[in-house]
Image (tube, rainbow, N blue to C red; front, side, top):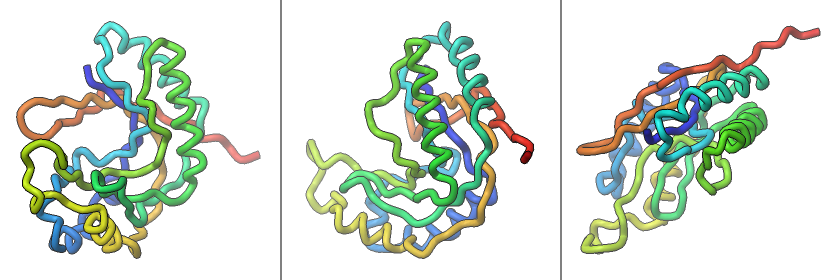
Amino acid sequence: MRLFVAVNPPSEAVQELVDAAAPVRELPGAERLRWSGIEGWHLTLAFLGEVPVTDVPELEAVLARTAGEHGAHRLRLAGAGTFGDRVLWAGVDGEVWALRRLAEAVRGAVGDVGIETDQYGFHPHLTLARAGSSRGRRRAEQRVAASELQHLAAGLDGFRGLEWEAAEIHLMHSETGFGPSRYRSLGAWPLAHWEAS
């Protein structure tokens, strides 16, 4: 099973981003991108890749324990950026330090049970769109330049969504095949809520 661990923004936050991104999707170059469906909008904490089904119960146990050791925190979707000429993403603002700490803990916990995560450092973001490959037979006029992606990201510079609570983590299953990937939550575990003393 192709799995990853994520924090999923609430539907209100997703709708705000849909509304903010609508004018950006009308800008020159946007039509050459593969835009992610909103069901794929999540903040990936750790990408696990292909995991045997037999490992899922142990994975669920370590995720439940890890979630209980980390507190819920406040986030908002804000701004945008790019990864070179490949990805257009929406940014995250708020208690990002807590999200980073959670991602590190999740990566450590799944590593302790023998599941390797991706080798990329954690960069909190939500993928909005991807450019096609610049290799192979793609014609030059179909490629999206890094400067074009940056121009599209600039269209979301002023975006700051409403604050929301990151209150649980999800083990997500990515189903690939014909058409776009489909995402399904296999389980969710609440982050801790500690009483103020």
